[in-house]
Length: 534
Image 1 (tube, rainbow, N blue to C red):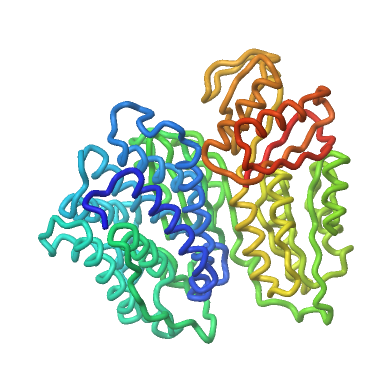
Image 2 (cartoon, rainbow, N blue to C red; image 1 turned 90 degrees about the horizontal axis):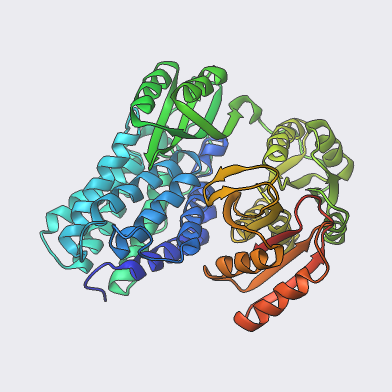
């Protein structure tokens, strides 16, 4: 039992909360009754908290900025990671709840019961502020009930406050069908609220060393076109869901929020350190993105057309399955082919991907894009193939090492949907990195670089800059394993010098003796080494 909530407790809560969400992911997804990507609340929450845990794992210095308490720094890392990886309404709102906790608790020397109660109130207020039109009977109601109960205890004992918050959240979740007729008609409780209850129960387990026993929620018997995740509570009038990250000043974001409120609904805008996560439903995609451009620099833009989620065509008689993988490099292509996947080389168009999907002749196809541009094409293919009766699922892999991890857990004995979830979890649990040469002088997040410098990118961001390829690769592996890991995968590029893999293997064996290493000739251009850590 803990008397104070320290940095170690923050990390345990994040890890245990993520494990709990993964166990209940399918159950939470089943609570949704709106067939759009934003409705996969269990999956969205898992992906959001996975990003939070990765942010914690990649930080090697608990007091990195020198201005925050250890637990405050850990909470801010968790909130920042959740913000950057937020998926859907539920993920965006969760990131804001975490930010509210971090902002309140960061300066507190020792977090006790009353401090946590104040922080939960700040988290609830932050969540409501993030939503343009807050609606009761959603995740918002659940976090508000938790904050109210925590404050009403009047106790400074951490376990008393956490139990009260978790119990009140569970009661509020049970009441959500009474607040929203859409939930009552479907026979379910709010999916986002359920996810938050699981996270609060995980907090009780960390603090008090016990797991609250909760009754299982009801599951919808008939799916209806109603959104119940986060703050969406009715069939949207708009045709598109738009989501993006935005680098901008607060004043500009306020003006953008006014614009998006006029042209759409389901608006959620949350931010931290000049980076904002924006989610909105609109008819005019261009106007929504233009509002982001006016405010600052939008990136990681995602657009979903709701009409591309039609009633399914009659399924094919065959229950066959297939995997289609995008790959650059002869060695990587051979690896995927060995795993039984159909390989599409280079940067394919939507048409080329669609041809590959159709050529499999399978009724259920998973696509692993391994590239943000290919992912856009894959999403378009999924919608087009669905109309023809082919069930296509896109696992959003960003690197071949993630695709290898995903393919390794395929199990044809599972339901296809469950198999896709398992593959997505495996891919998400694989941190990825790449090493290349700088093509020009530039200013990166790791500092300035010159043409010819060795760049090590982790999850797409420059993490290390070096002069020697081998030394930089070794330092990269050390940094990645500093956050934990049992298996390192190395894909060797066509430009890799002799001895690179041997040097990395030797170093890992000496410094990380319990870590397994597997290396393959990838043959990829431009990147002498691709690294995956699981």
